[in-house]
Image 1 (cartoon, rainbow, N blue to C red):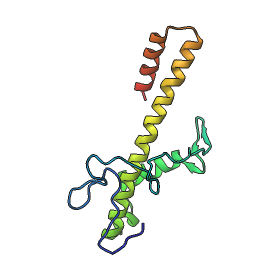
Image 2 (cartoon, rainbow, N blue to C red; image 1 turned 30 degrees about the vertical axis):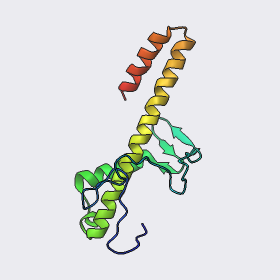
Image 3 (cartoon, rainbow, N blue to C red; image 1 turned 90 degrees about the horizontal axis):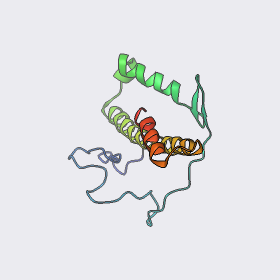
Length: 142
């Protein structure tokens, strides 16, 4: 994380800074950095592998990451306890950023699930209304 001065700190989107202000002013719409027109960046076409024992996105093993993070949250660690104030704030800011990224991925995945279930129902010649109900029920279970 680069800082212009030792007193400045990047505030993740949605997180409050020391003055209680959030990462962007009220009413301001998010635009990817370096993109004044607000166009979305290219899709992130990383391979996703899902089976009973593995869930990876690119080289990132989500099941292993979840295990490590859950253990740190439940039991703590000496390295966590030894972080200074700046390190602790950076860790908290990163966690907030991860939460936002995971929520965004969760929402996109739920929409994909609803679309896939709806398409499957329609292939089986169920009514569009019934397909939508089944799709929403499946998506709400996640």
